[in-house]
Image (tube, helix red, strand yellow):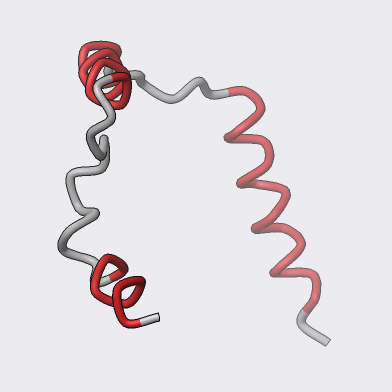
Length: 58
């Protein structure tokens, strides 16, 4: 029971994704792409999430 509400929410989200185009920050995308071509990490949060430390321990 309770599947109807979850299904309705999924349908709502699917409609929003299908019919509403998200706003794109093309300048930010260009900066990220130009940084990744240099071999640098394009992610601003890569150092903060702890994955770098985890990969060193492995």
